[in-house]
Length: 389
Ligand SMILES: Nc1ncnc2c1ncn2[C@@H]1O[C@H](COP(=O)(O)OP(=O)(O)O)[C@@H](O)[C@H]1O
Ligand SMILES: [Mg+2]
Image (cartoon, rainbow, N blue to C red):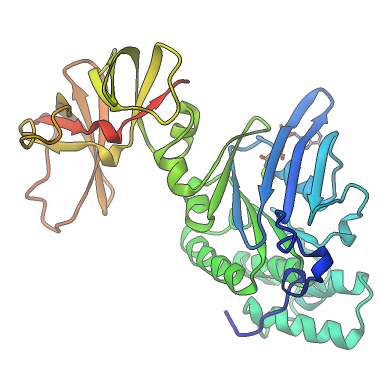
């Protein structure tokens, strides 16, 4: 990125309207719902976003992400609830009057307008003076590295370049809050990764607040400091990437965010800070006490594949240290070599299957396991997550 840094409303905000000064979140979403016919696309979402946050809304297609963004931008009106920006209800504020801009999923560039005129569009509509528009457009072109392409039309650009025009157009009015709807979905993997890094750098340097929508959990975890997982119009969990991955609140979240082994079972007994859970497919497992108290007898135990260790013989616990290790005998059923890691699927003697992901830390495969080899798959109680649903 270049050194051309537009100042945002947030950076120049007057003291009386400055949400940070008042100790308020920049954005407060309060019980917002949207119904299409009889279908509740957004079903009672409440969420606070702080100024300067990079927040990701993550969820499968159709869970209501775009509808929620469109309500923030003002293109849809909520049927229930309120949206407050800097403490003020913005229900009656028109989209172009909100200090919020949205970058649309399909970019929605004007095909008949040049790069320059696409970027200038919102500035003209806002009545900015011609000379100021020219300066601002030049800044934006430099910021997103589109120099030399100002006169091209969208159909004369690559996918990545079109994405940059859409980003420049969304940033041109220096919004306080930028909403990005699946901004990288149309880019190939390599370009997506480099663009992720650029967006993060841009957000940090502009000191702006970003809400990005994605259905890609890796993208959300890479970019955002906080993630809201959406399911069927509701926020299922709001947490940091690490909390979300290591402490998912439900089986659905555990399975949506990354790979996971899940064993259904029944609570047997509590042993100090441990729970003993009898599972159908992996025998009796010992887990750490979950953060939230368990009320039901039917529970599931979730273990991420990289927490499952493999060895040729049962691990020996050191005297006085971990004795309640979960150790499962099995045989390697199949092997998926992924370069940096290898995933082994182990068929357990108890009937179930467990996946173990092993880092290929050496180039030569002297330690690799082969199909049909007998192994022990083991993991510690602390690596187990107890789930109620
Ligand atoms: N204008 C509309 N009229 C009727 N149904 C809609 C409309 N917009 C969205 N929906 C429905 O609401 C649900 C959520 O849509 P959307 O917010 O676009 O989901 P996402 O962005 O998470 O994929 C979908 O089932 C979609 O078909
Ligand atoms: Mg969408």
